[in-house]
Amino acid sequence: MKTYLVTGGAGFIGANYIHYLFEKYDDIHVYNLDKLTYAGNPENLKEFENNPNYTFIKGDICDPEFVGPLVAKSDIVVNFAAESHVDRSIGAPDDFIRTDVFGAFVLLESARKHGVEKFIQISTDEVYGSIEKGSFVETDPLMPSSPYSASKSGADRLAFSYYVTYDLPIIISRCSNNYGPYQYPEKLISLFITNAFENKQLPVYGDGKNVRDWIYVWDHCNAVDFIIHNGQNGEIYNIGGGNERTNLEITEFILKALDKPHSLIKFVTDRPGHDRRYSLDCTKLKNMGWKPEFNLETALQATVNWYREHQAWWKKIKSGEYLEYYKSHYGKSL
Ligand code: NAD
Ligand code: TDX
Image (cartoon, rainbow, N blue to C red; front, side, top):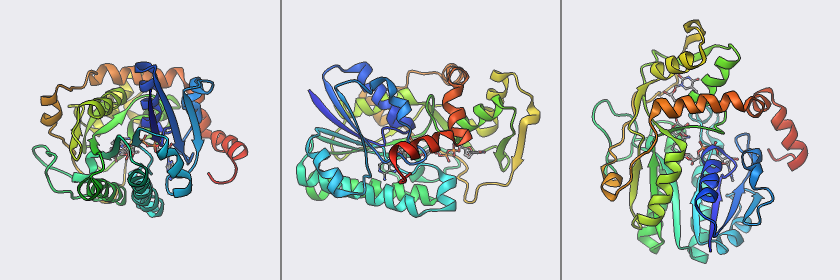
């Protein structure tokens, strides 16, 4: 029986990862430590509420008193908890520095004190910055350009330092842009699908030609599982979907899938410091035997279908009803 501490498990990728774990393993216990910020939603894990192998704990990764006993009980720590939206980091960077950097530090210190079998720091492709041509390999220098990616870079390198200095069993993953079920409707794909359903405009930043490499969230979860079992301590692994598309290409796909007109597209002022292109060289992971399973067009269509079938989920979020509900159930600290 392995015990996992998944932080940020009520968010988009963390929730999918917990679904993934319970689909794959019977003999595990999962502690899900999540602060339930605006992005955390326990509804994402409703089906596990009565599962004796699942424990949800509302708490902050920045609080060592809280984190210590949980880390002490866990074999594997997977740190997804973060402020994750670039636009929010431009408006108010404070929480990004606090959670993404200091929170990672608190988790690492607890791991140093109590010992763990594996500590996975979920980093991101954004730490490399933008690249015009070619693709980044794991040894390339970090050139983050937003307060979000700079915070993630801080945590990424701090985690590495705990491997070098304290010999902690750290592995760092750097994944590209995820899409799929349970994504908070503020990111490109989840926002545009839900806006299109409501016949609202789709705000494309700048000329819409920025390129992202899209990966279905299930493939990301699968890659994290793969590196836990096959990765080497102290190593970094790029995880990419191999699906580079411009934002306009993604937007057009969504409009077509929903049979909505192009007139919903609205070109708006560009994001400050907007990275032009992200691209990962994933040869390292490929040579170890991992590759993504999902094709972009099929999985994006499945994602559109998921949002069609789960309108109550995202409408509650978009209307503000969700925040009101959790404020009354979990107190004022949202
Ligand atoms: P998300 O914003 O949907 O979820 C983040 C979760 O962390 C939420 O449930 C939130 O409540 C929780 N959280 C925030 N602050 C916390 C704190 N102080 N203590 C405990 N919990 C806290 O984010 P996501 O898109 O699921 O991303 C998860 C991780 O994956 C992040 O570390 C992000 O940097 C990384 N990542 C995301 C992508 C992507 O495309 N979304 C790509 C690569 C890497
Ligand atoms: O309304 C929008 N209009 C628009 O044109 C939004 C929300 C985004 N965009 C553009 C900006 C980017 O070029 O779409 C692209 C994708 O934007 P986001 O969905 O905000 O993602 P990005 O900024 O690329 O960062 C994401 O991928 C890496 C995640 O949010 C990060 O958490 C992850 O680390």
